[in-house]
Length: 270
Image (cartoon, rainbow, N blue to C red; front, side, top):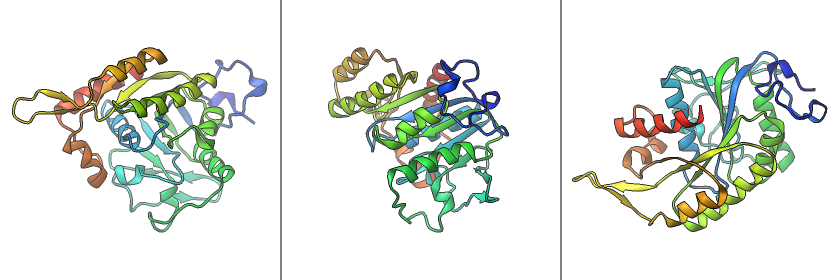
């Protein structure tokens, strides 16, 4: 049974009678934003962590829910791969980073991060719901949900069982990727989930000598994709060693240029 008093969507549901959302009354989460792509390998988890770090730096209380049960990467990107979550058997306590970002991932509940999760769809969906309902998130301004690729069980579970404030789509400037991301956008719209806009990752490289931005693609496909789907471009992230190194060392401090880009993106979604 849903608990409307602890739901971020309180008083905005179209029908309480058909609400499938179960909330933890101990949690008070103001906004829940899904980070989605529909396609793997576009840097969705990296974008999730970068946005979480930026929101945290701006003074907000932030949590990350890693809903990619079979391919979790958030612990490593947060530099928390050696940490484990604590459970009382009923409640689960998330891992907290040194900068107080609360994080929950299936990798915090296994002995070895290389251990595969070989589960069928219903078990995966139930794990995601448990990470939302049974984890003691406490008071958060933002909970970011790193969603797995595709439009399958987990995406459906998140959109139907968690009160999302909206989703941010992550794409790269390539025709094939835009087509696949379009499917995720259409899914969100079918389920009446607000699409906040698109973050284009690997958008350009920057000349180290003259600082000129060099586009790997001409941008026409991106503009057509945004126009066809009636979406806003939230920001463009460059292809740099700084972002590539995040996968090896986690997110620490970012350059002034990247920080400015992230500030502009966050200002459009918060």
